[in-house]
Image (cartoon, rainbow, N blue to C red; front, side, top):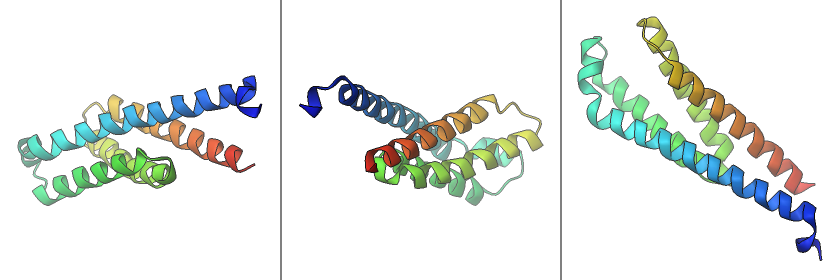
Length: 125
């Protein structure tokens, strides 16, 4: 009977939507990180930054995106992504470049991490 109750259907639908949102954002950030890892050498070199920093940044974003995909590791992945995206946004700001997409990604990671935390607390209760 509890599975047929409207409240449980709604909770299940919200969990599915939250999972899909995390998957979409994690995949988008992972693809962007992979693209930066494979094709970002020239841009980083133009600004006089070491290639090792680009590799570390892209690897951190890839790791955070992978962790963000799964409910149990979503908070850890969100924290890694927050650090990486905030650093990248600050770097873009220091260079006088637009960082609008980074700020949007940062806001989305915060919102989905908070929603995941609330959902996990609600599930335990």
